[in-house]
Length: 222
Image 1: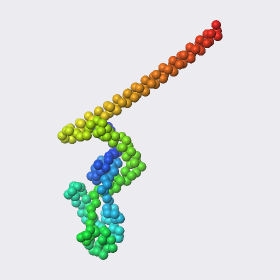
Image 2: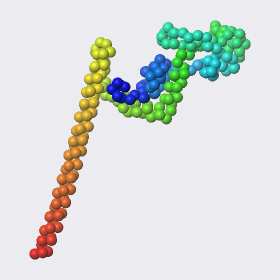
Image 3: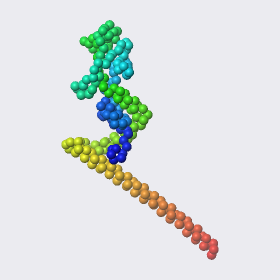
Image 4: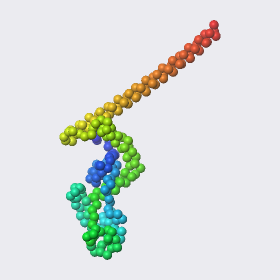
């Protein structure tokens, strides 16, 4: 878009595009995103306080749960950070039965590697500007996809490869815009015709009144 002279500063999308990798990439490109995080995101266990400066958590009992390692989740293929206490810390804790699993002797949990990016995204989405951008997306972007799907039959793309799919979406976009344009100029033409008719009516009325005045004036002179 920058190559064509279009300035791109903000990006809006629905929760389906939410991921730490996406947030980090958009920030690296200097783009401000307004993408709501998915419902599974958690910044850490309930009632645990994160210490950003030292990169550790404090449990409800005030014990430090330190950072241990970065790993790749084999299920989601996303980077995560592991935090783990020691069995000595958790031994005798009054909350151990609620906090630990049945066979666990220490507190262990993982948090997305992109926690800070998630937190910044949440702050943006919940801001005044974020609420405005959400309404903008719902009124301008989502109706287009709904119309393409429900009224123009674009329920799936029957092509192979991103390039071919891109062509299909471009053609669908052109068709959508042409229909809107035709509808717009039709309304404009009708509006213009009504305006022209009103002008002609006013002119006729004006000339009619003027002729009446002249005729009366002529009658008085005679």
